[in-house]
Structure formats: structure tokens, C-alpha cells
Length: 225
Length: 297
Image (cartoon, rainbow over all chains, first blue to last red; front, side):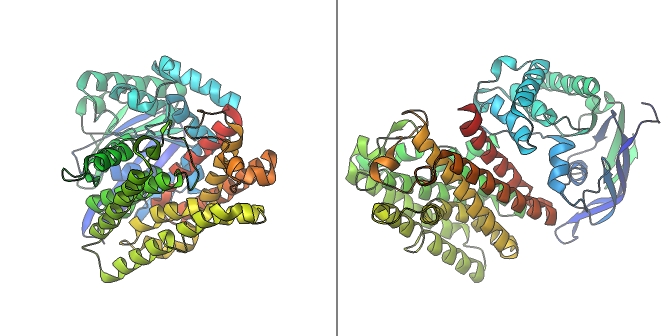
């Protein structure tokens, strides 16, 4: 990756503990992510990868430390929801889709939240669905889809509002090995094609090594692997 | 979310008051009542609130089931010939049409009683203060001054003036009661409800009124079978309906205004604490309902 690329994420000396400070999770974690870069956070379960993603995504706030995401400070952002809706996309291990809605309706929800015109949304849904191979499933309800198909929909939904940064928390964690490989390849291909930076939390080394750069999360700190 | 939904649907069956010793026809009616739980919006809100505000999973499951049982019971009673005299619910014949009115009433009572027991169990290990707050909330939402008054006003609406304000008052009592419980009950042990009571109440009012207004619009504009319940009942029974009172264009404008106000509440809550982000997910779901009604229909 070119060093000249804009820095999208800066995490500097961030600390986070739970249960009134009794359970320290992050202890001075620092990292940078540049535009269009795919970075893996690799570490064991409970190492703090998800907490770090939540802090970057504004889903939680650090106890102390500096944090800048897409030019905003998620802690002080006057409209945290706007940052989440317009600049970031999330893909979780459990896809968090709405079971009783169709694929198309699930994809429409984030676009409605930012007031995107209907015709534009419909075209975007069609494009993304074709890119991930679920165009034939748009009218099907989520509960009728396989695990791999659901995760494809989750990726599409995360990309609906053309975010600059995608946060993926163990997106292959609930899938079998072959489907996991497919989903990872798809995520990487889409990120590269759309110029989106990705921060991927994973405990699987093969996925970490396949990213542009991978960092190790251990004892609440982030280090080069 | 689907994992939660599937787990809650399983819990609804497991916690249902249909025991082996229950009279067979009543048991069948109870099983039918919980087998088609609909979208489980209230249960979903509770599970999300529990996840974000640290409520024990077992307690969350009990509260989720309780809210869905109350909701289901309110629908069974609402559909009876002495109330709305509906033919279908969720695309299926109403319970009183398949099992008779008496059995439907007994099934509703079975669900209501089980719901109270589940709420009590959910708070067994909490402080006396939390249990008292839960009792007060449940009483105000479901008691004679809450959903029951909403239903009573609903029945007598034909004798009143039918102003939009009156329609809104009834909608809040009827639709808002359970939504208010779903918003507040899971937050009691963490103290989050006490901190944000005013904002959550405002959000609950805007959501309930917007949802009811969309339902009213649906009642007058969707052909039979299109919404899963009997359309045109409000006009036929002279029941409160915002679209009948205001007309469709003004109803649409009111829905937009209510959703915009709800959005402001959600933004402000998320700004104060990111743990409220789950409310944005539910707000966005209402936006989809609006989309379906205004654009996709």
C-alpha cells in the first residue's frame, strides 16, 4: 500500500476496561489504517479485537486515548449516528439481518436511514447483489437463506451507503471452512474494487496473512505481526 | 438478529402456558396462539436492550416472552366479536373463529397470567426498588388507566367527536402501552431507564403514534389479504382512524413528522451514549414500513 494514502483510522494509546475497571481489555492499543487498505487484527478470543472494532465504530467509548475515524472523533462526534450511517459499514459474525424481511428490504434499510433516493437505492441493490451473487435471492426472506448467503447479504448491506471503512468482526466465524474462504475472498475483492478500507478482526491466521497487513492483538496491545 | 428471533420463537413455545394437564382444546388454542408470533418487535427490542445494557440473558428471555404473550393476548381480545369482530390475523383465521369465543378468552387469560409470572421471575434477584419500579410500570401500561382505557375509548369512539387529537390519545394508550414496557423494563436493573426516562418516553410516543398512523393508512388503503388482517374495519365499526379523520395526504405528512421527531430522539440518545445505537436499528425498521406504505405499495 502506498504510504501517501490518507489515514482513515488513528487509534493512539487507547485504554478500555469493563466492570468498573476490574476487567482491563485494551491497555494502550495503537494503530493506523490508510484508505483502501485491508488490515487484520489477529488474536485469540478475548484479546480485545472486537472491543477495538467497537471503539473505532463508535459503538463504545474508550476510557482514555485518542481516536480519529474518517476525520471524526467517535467520542466527541456531535452526530455519532451520522458517522455510523454514512461513513462506516459493519459485518458481524452473526449477520444481524432482520429475519422476517426479504433480502431487498434488508438492503434498503440503511439507504432509507440516510434518505437516499429510491431509484438510486434500487440500482445500488441490484449492482451489489450481482457482485456477491445473490441477485436471484432478492425477494427471498433472510430466514430462508443459508449461512453463506446471509453473510453475503450482510456484506451488501454494509456497503449500501458506500462507506469509506468497513469493520468486519469475525465475519467467517459462524461458517464452515469452504464457505468461510469464499466469504473472505468476496470481502477482499469487493473492498479492493470499491476502494474501501477494511479492518478485519479474526482469530484465523490464514485470513490475517491474506490481508494487506496484519497486526497482532495481545494483552490489550496491538503490535506488528 | 435472526439468531435472537429464532431463539425467542423457541422460548415462546417452551414457556407457553400449555401444559400436559391443560384441557386439550384450550391447549391447542394456546399452542396456535404462540406458534405464529409475527415480527416479535417488542421481544427484539428487549433482547437488544439486554445485550447493550447488561441484563441477564435468562431475564431478557423471560421479559421478551412476557411482552409477546401480552401482545398476543391483546390481539386475541381485540379480534373478538364484541371488540373489532375481525376475521383474520397475520393472514390466518382469528383464534375465536377456529376455537370459539370462550376458548379464545381463556387462551388470552392464560397468556396474560403466564406473562405476569415471567416478569416476576425475571426480577427475582433484583432489588426491592427495581421490583417496585417494574410493578408500577406494568400497572400503568396495562392497568385500567393504560391499555384498558385505550380499548374502552376505542369502543366508544363513535359517540365522541373523533378529532385527530382524540385518535392520537387512544393510539398511545393502545399501541404505546406494550412498546413502552418493551423500552423500559429491560433497562431497570442497569438504571439506564431512570437516566433517560424522558427521552425514551418521547421516543415511545413518536414510534407508537407513527406506527398506528401507518396502520390506519393501511386499514383504508390496502385490499383484503394485503396486510394479513381484515381491512376496512375502522370505518365499518366507527373506530378511531387518523386517515379517516385527516385524509391520506395529511396522515402521510404526520407520519413523516413523527418519524423525524423520533429520529431526533434516537440521535440525541446515541450522542449521549453509544449503547443506545440499537434503537437506531429499530427506528430504521419503521422507516422501511413507511417505505412499503408510501412507495412500494
